[in-house]
Image 1 (spheres, helix red, strand yellow):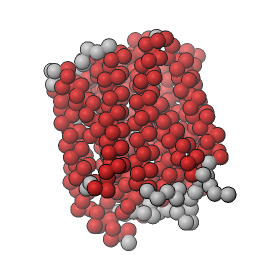
Image 2: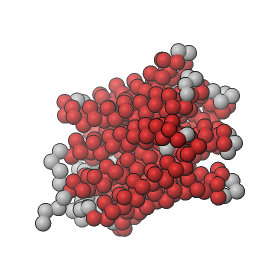
Image 3: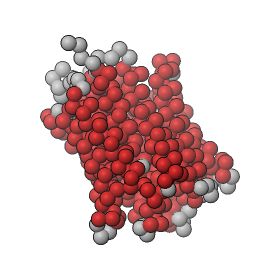
Image 4: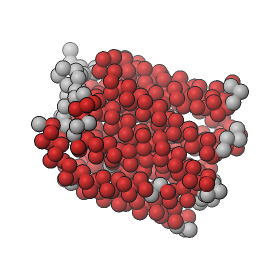
Length: 398
């Protein structure tokens, strides 16, 4: 009986949607936490930082143990953790003496699930016998973007109809998606990424100059993406004076839409493009967007910078994975895990740095965004160095 790999695709796509829920739902509630629980902005930034630090630790553990434990068990565990964390977010802040502790405990649990699927989704799809893997991989990563759009739009509509005070009910509703996906991962066909089931060791990867540049690139890509995305809603409300609903739609929602468009464009026309040139142009555009969001006194210009930034960072994550997959084909699970770890490292400290800078400037988020300009700047420098390192990577890998 022929294996139905469409079930595998569906499970991975829903897994990335679950990751989008985990990454984007809590930031929509930042100001709600600030007002209801009296949590200062400096502590609220720790929500994003702990989320990505937990993902980072999960990435490292995946690099060492995922092949040994098996993709299926890890994927099922990822969905269980995601569901448990979202349910915890609804109940623990009220059950524990300190609401902040309840929030953070829930974040840690669903961050483990998010980290597992982040690492495993790409190699699971890569191992499937599809004809056009580049297009499938690009579509996989675009589902994170469309998932983000869905989370923001549905959450905004839910808050408009039932009030933001009902956010705990919505957290329970979002938990149903990973709960259903547990079954999908339990029954779908999952193949090994390499013939022997194991790829290169971490020590071997770290001897390749291209891989080190890719690590730096992923750190800056994660910081550039999440520093803008995580604060887009609060930025739109405080700096641009928009309402909660308008801020969510104009900020993080449109950010995710443009990021998804970028990945969809590359997925369709990537064979006609020079990937490095496209990424370099996107890096320059990202820097311009940060400058516009941080220095412009015109709300329209600042909002445009926020939105277009999504397009500029969209190619960075899948583009870097594509480069490494092509030039280091034996990289295996460890390569995917370490790249994800680097992106999470950037996502961990990027929003925290922006939030801390904003708090130091009397809660001025535009000043925080100005500090964030360092991320796309280093990203551009890394891309300029990447082309020259390509030959060295090929020779060492051979």
